[in-house]
Amino acid sequence: MHEMAITQSVVQTVAERCKGRQVDQVTLLVGALSGVVADSVRFCFDMCTMGTDLEGASLDIVDVPGRAHCRECDELVELPDFIALCPCGSADLEIVAGQELSIQSVEVKV
Amino acid sequence: MCSTCGCSGDGEAVITDPAHTHDHDHEHDRSHDHEHEHDRSHDHEHEHGTAPHVHATMTTETVTLEERVLAQNDLGAARNRGWFEGRDILALNLMSSPGAGKTTLLVRTIADLATQRELSVIEGDQETLLDAERIRAAGAKVVQINTGSGCHLDADMLARGLRVLDPTPGSVVLIENVGNLVCPALFDLGESARVVIMSVTEGDDKPLKYPHMFRSADLLILNKVDLLPHVDFEVERCISDARRLKPDLEVVQVSATKGDGLDDWYAWLERVPARPG
Image (cartoon, rainbow over all chains, first blue to last red; front, side):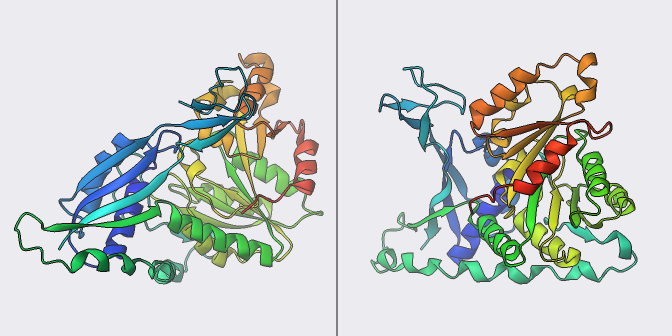
C-alpha cells in the first residue's frame, strides 16, 4: 500500500544523486522484514519513473532474508517473520538481517 | 504522497486550519525544505569515468549509492523531534484502522483533561474536515491534513501542519494518523511515542496480521471494551500476541464512549517515556 510512496522516494533520491544522467538500472535491497512488498515496488516503478531520468530503467530487487541471533543458544537462525521462534524454543532473538530497505547502486549511461 | 494501491498525485497534502477555512495561503508554502539533504552524492563518479569506454557495448557505469530509501523521511522526523524537544512538547502518533475510535477517544480526552493539560491535534485523513470539526467543537486547537490519495502521514506533512497549528510550548500534540494499520508504521514522524488503538469489534487477531504496526507501538489502547459481552474477542490472546511482537508493550483497556479505563490512559500520558530518536 505504501509502496507507491516508497518507490517515489527511490526515484527522487536516484534522480537527485545522479544529477541529470540517464539511469539504466537501479538495484534495491529489500529485506523480508522491511514491511515492503517487492512485487508492489516493481508494479509502481515504471509509473514513477515516467518523465524522469530513470524512464525506461530496469529495476533489480535483491531480497534479503530475515536472520536473527538467538541470545539463548547463540546460533544464527532464519527469521521468516517477527513472531518466529529459534529452534531451541527461545523468543529472545536479535534481528541481524532482513530489515534492509535501501538503494544499493545504479547503472548510469556514460 | 503515497497512494493506497494506485496513487496519482504529486503527493501534495492539503493542510487546513478549520478556524480559517476561507484563507488559502497555506497551500503555497510547501516546497521549501527539500534542498538541504542532497549535497552528498557526487563523489562516486570519478573512479569510473576516466577510462576510454571506446567499445560500444560499455555504455554504462555503476554508481554505488547505499542510501536508505526512507532516509529523507527520517531526516524530516529528526527535525520534527528536535522541534518538539526544543518546545518541551509531548507528541503522540495515534494509529489505528478506520473506525477504531481514535477521534472519539481524543474528543473525550480533550474534555476530561481540559483543566489539566493543554492539548492540540493534527488530524490526518484522506478527505474532509469532519474530524477536525469534532476536535474543534471539543475545544482544542486543530489542523487537518488531507492526504488525498495518500494512506499515511509523513514527516514533511507533519512539519507543515505544525507550523499552522503552532502548539504552545510544554503542551501535548496528538497526531491522529490516517486510519490504516499498515502504511503509517513505516513512517517516523518524530513523535515522542506511538500509540496503537484497536477496538474489540475488529477481532483479536489484528496484532499477528499487522505485525509492523504493533511492533512499533509503545502503547496499545484496546477500545470499546464495553462491547466485549457481545463479540467474540479474547483479550488475553490479543495482548499476548501483541507482546510476542513487542515484549514491553503497555496496554490499557478503555471505552471512550462509556469512560471505562480512561484513567489508565491519562495516567500513561503523565508518565509516557520519550521514544529514542
